[in-house]
Each structure stands twice: as structure tokens, then as C-alpha cells.
Amino acid sequence: MLIDFQTLKSQAKGIQKNNFKKAKIAILGNYTTQFLAKSIEYSGLKHSLEFEIYNAEYDQIESEIYDLNSGLYNFNADFVFITISSLKLQSKFYALSAEKKASFCRDYITDLTNLINVLNSRIKTKIIINNLEILNDQVFGNFYAKVDQSFVSNIYDLNAGLLQLARTFDNLYLFDLNGLIQYYGTRHIRDWSQYVNADLHYSLDFHAAISEKLVAFIGAFLGAIKKCVIVDLDNTMWGGIIGDDGLQGIQIGSLGIGKSYTELQKWIKQLKERGVIVAVCSKNTESIAKEPFEKHPEMVLKLDDIAVFIANWENKADNIRAIQQILNIGFDSMVFLDDNPAERAIIRQNLPAVCVPELPEDPALYLDYLKSLHLFETASFSTGDKDRTKQYQEEAQRQQLQFTVTNIEDYLKSLQMEIVIEPFDPMDIPRIAQLTQRSNQFNLRTIRYSEVEIRDMATDSSNYFTCSVKLKDKFGDYGLISVLILKRLNSESLFIDTWVMSCRVLKRGVENAVVNYCVALAKNNGFHQLVGEYISTAKNDLVREHYPSLGFADKEGFWHLDVQNFKPLIHYIN
Image (cartoon, rainbow, N blue to C red; front, side, top):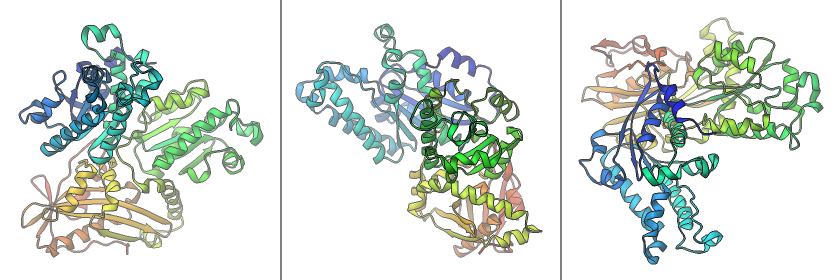
């Protein structure tokens, strides 16, 4: 069912904008987009995002981009959404000669490439463009693939061309409009009388559906992402109750309702491969709860896929708190799946920041429903994401070690930590950008950077010094856990433009080791002081006292460290 535009509007009405993430969005469309602009505004408020929106005039994409004095450039958007309707392209296509129809795709992609190049030469922004609705005009019927003058054939070719453009331009991203239309069905996304009379290419409710998916994607760039899915087991990951029905009695596999649970597990497994953390929270005896993972031949998820496994008879709210402490991520980055409405209500009441989807009663509908929520949008991906589960399993071992030592110094020494601090490696750029986009708690200024922006700073040695920090200990390799970008203010001072760090390594002494390194770097390059800034957000109160704790002094809202008289800070890292 489509999201109701009026419901979306009412959900946004009266929301208090407290510490909302903010962004400026420009919308350029070849059709009427005023209702889309309002939907994006409402969806943003619903998801604690405040958008300032520039909605260009009707069908003015080229004029806005080519005209240096256009409203687009005066607005200076963080995101430019270029939205193209296949209906509009169809009208242009029909007016062409046979020769021009044959070259339509090639010509259109060339024009679009020029537009993107011009836009990139004038402002730094993230560009999002929708792929195209596969609109079959039935002129050639199913023979369309054989004819280069077929509009349908050209639409398929255009989508392939758009995909290639997204791979060519680092700051260009594709919005899957065609997939959204397929999900809801072409007969439900537009009112043909409104199209004829008002040039409304989509219904009000479909505008709401577009905005929900688009806002989820933009939110990922702003750090509003889901990092962890916590799953119940009985009647959620399999049919039946393992403690009562036994290993042979639970429903899972390729037959009957068991297929629903298997398909859900396959999807969760793919999320895990992408870097989403998977945890278990079940009211069960632990040994019994683990049995299907260890012994059932048709279980897709295995214990190796689970970062934290909690099965006991305590209340689930407390168990989720325990999971949060181990993972050290925000409750608002967690999704909890449970078939039991009462358990869902308890979590919503006790942990309101946790996302708790209202799973349908029929397990066959679980997966389709969850996909429709767009919960796991991401703005980056790196190969290191696949190792995240192993890293959290290792963290659980570290926490157990803490109970066997008598003081923090002995504990830190026993970890046998080793650190590598070095300038940005081109191979690490995706992970570095990811840290700036995802880190909320240990993030001194909360400035988000794209891969292309990180790459530019890494190569601008006259203005920037970059530091990536990698850590490992006797339990395993943390990988890249901290990023610093130091900017030359003048001949005397280096400004800490960005300092983000994974909260998994808090209180390990990494901060001290990093400051020692930065002081040495500053001295070696003739600087006399490091200058830091703390910009408060709703989530980074953790580092409010970060600079004074490291010896920095407050001067008119900035934190200064005299590198000439600095005494190295103590840590237990090699």
C-alpha cells in the first residue's frame, strides 16, 4: 500500500526541531515537482532531518545548471536531486526523426555528462539522479529489443548509461525510481487525469513514497543510519519454538512456511556481508537457542554471523542495553525484529530510540515489509565492512578479559596493542569517508565528507596533513579506527579540521598516542600550535571535554596546544 501524503503531512506537523541534522536540497525536474518538494520536507521532519529546499521552476534542468547566475548556484545545495520522468522523455522521443531516435540514448547521456561536468566545476555537491521508469508504449510490443527506434529499447539503454555515469563520477548517485514503481505497480503511481490536466506525473501518495526512500538515502550521508539488526529467534528466525518443538520440529528450509524464514535469513546474511551488525536477543536457554545455528542443516545464519548472542530469561530491554554496551553504538542505529507484539511494545516503551518494525502476522510478508521500510540505506561501502562481525566478537572477548585483571593499566598492557598512524592510503579512501559519514559520538566537528572530497584533501599536501589510524591487539585487528585531517591555518598553526574515531576503541589510549603523533608532525613541519574545535551536537557530548583532557587550552571558543612545551602523553600502545 502506498504511503498516504496527508498522513505524512500530519506526522510532520508540530514536530519540534530539536538538534535535527540539517541539509540543503535542490530539486531540478523535467516535470512538476512542488508536491515532491513538500513530501521531502515532511519526510525529513518525520526522520529528525531539517531540510532547506530549493525547488527549481518547471522543466528548467539545463537552464539552472548552465546559467551561472541561476538560483541553483545562489542556493549552494548540499544535495542536488535531478528527477526525470520517462513520460517527458517519451514526448521528446516521439518528436524526433528516425535517425535521431536511433541515437537518442547516446545523445542524451552525452548531454547529461556535460551537465554534470558543468555542475561539478561550479559547486561541490552530491548529485542524485533517478533511473528511468521502464515505460512500455507498446509501439513495437515485445519486438522492442530488436529496434533501435523503439522508445522502450532506449529506456533500457539509458538506465545502463546512467549506471555507468554513477560509476564514473564519485559524487553522482542513482536513485532507484524504477524499482519503486515496480514495487507499487504502474497503475497505482499516477492519476492519468491529473497528468493530462496538471502535468502531475505521479500521484500525491507516490510523491510521499519517493520522498521516504530519498530521505532515507540522504539521511545515510548525514549519519542517520542503521548499523545493527537485533533478532528474536522463535517464530522470527524460524517457525515454532525450539525449546518445545526440538531441532526437527522447527520450520525452516525450502518447504511451506519455513521458506519465509529462510528467505529472511538470506537477506539478513547479505546485510551482514555488507557490514550491518547482526545480534540475537531471545528469551531462551542459551544452549538450546544456539542448537539450530550449530546443527540444523538448513539454517542460513551461523554463529559466526552473530556479533553478540544473548539468550536468557531476562527482559529484552535490559538485554538490548547489554548489546548496546558491547557494540558501543547508539540505540537509534539499532533495528529490533520480534514476532511478539507485546515484546515490541516493551522495547518501544523502554528504548524509544530503537527502531521496532511492526512485523505482519503472516511470516510470508516479513521480508517484503522490511524491504519497503528502506531501513538499511548506506552512503558508502568498503571491503573491510565484511569483517565487522568478527571485530565485535573479538570485542566481547576483550570485555571478558577486563574481569580477570585488577587495574586498567594491567588490562591495557595485557592487550598487547600495536598502532599504525600514516597519511591516507588511496585504498582506504572509502573507509575514511565512511568514518566521517557514520561517526556521531566521537566526532569533534561532525563534518561529513564524500570520497571525492577526502581524495582531494589527501592530495593537497600544501594545505592538508592527513592521518589514518589502524589498531590491532592480541585478539584481532580493529582495522582503520580513527581519522584526522589537519589543515594549515597559517605558518604558525595547524587546525584539526576533522577528528573521528570508532567508539570501539575508547579508553584504550589511542587518543594519547594520536596527540603525540600530531605534535611531532607539527614540530617537524615548523608549526608552533595545534588548534582544535568542538561543535556540539545531540550525539557527541561524549567528547565535550576531549581537548581539555589532552592538555589543550581554551582561547575564544577554540582549543590550543603549544607543541614546543608539550610533554608526551602516557599510553600502552606500541
